Length: 608
Figure: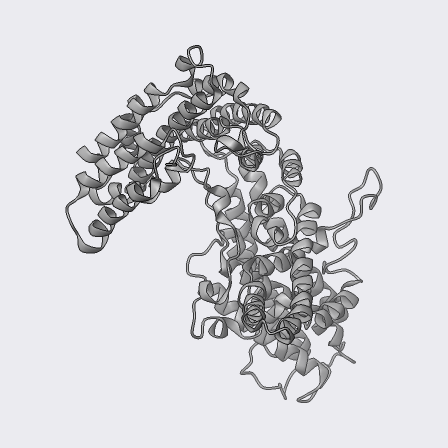
């Protein structure tokens, strides 16, 4: 008995062979590729949900080889026109009254959705060929597609028409989703693309409308994770992080998914001031890795004992290359160290007053810093404790980039396929490794300055305390100076990674204050300097004053940079400004505050 539908394999193989000839052997079968894509779409769009996924790489190749600088070629135009014909032919609103069989209606809906996805993918690939800042060229491409795409209103109406179809796994659908859910996702992307040139006040209306539509869709299809991810991003855009966090919790991310699926919420949490939730999620990631390491130690020997050698080797390789070197583990450690001073208990500080900085954990320049710094130093040897991130600052950049780039050293375990529903407007999820390493440097410095001040000795009768090589103050000052040197190398060679002018200015001010503390406590400000023999308090004071002038200048530069960053611009929203403030508060303002208070403690010891 033959198959109920045509086999996709032979047709897909034909497209693949044509594409291979074009990409590897530079054949001129562009028109043949276009015709093969159109034929495949007409044959399988009604019956195969994965029709668009099958054709997506070949559409990209077609646009890449036939179009230049966003100019639409005849072959691409033929493909776009075919998607319009397919969409109009299979409009579910025109067939619902005449077709009672839900199977046939679902086939029409699948073809309708596939035609829009193919058109959006072609549109996106053309936009990728141009500079997005070239507004006139971008608008020219957008206008070229206006006659070939449905309106957002049409997509919503079609979605309402097909709500009665329900999910049917026996007909190629998924039990967790409704067949029309993709219409809402496509409509939201189209809406966001159309408002990209509007100011925030106009865009906010569209964001609120999108949030309402997505909430309605989620109520109809509560188990669709893509609707929830899209809604999560929308709620963050309108400044509703608590609702976004509620949606994320509804996704029920568990086990290994903590490592692969936390990336799209962590940056939102820290940027919106949900520090407690961010620490909780980061803590779950670290716990997962710790448990995983123990499980490998437990089950790997059993695999060898039972003769499953390859399985045991796979466990070792997975643990060493993917889990231990996980970028997400590195990010989780850094977030916990950044946010620890900002964490407070639910009832800390009472109902009226906010809890003080460093109420529970972290270094903040207070009286509890010494005990905490000593604990951080002890815990830094435990790889699955957050303070171990400091070990990355010991060797500097040369160790981290000795033979491989950072991208090769670290394992990016994120599941980016979760964002495959984005076609026309794609969210850029980046993890700048250099920024994560910056956290290692800053927390290594904070720990060492607290220990340095603890080991400093007050002057006696107006004379500085003498010390010899190997004394406590010598060891701690050398350790701080080496860390400062590595941090200075990091700062000078960040190669354009995401450091704002505010970050750079306060970084410089922090390093200058550390230099002041080294001069005042040990009489030297570099690794090359020898223990001073003809030293006095007046000389140290003179040297410190010069460095403090540079600290003042850096602070003023940072203040001006902050004012410029949050100034009222046409497209700058209050949400964006708030996000930036929450970000720098944890990343650099609190560490600088800690450095400033620790410097003041040292000054008080010297009666300054």
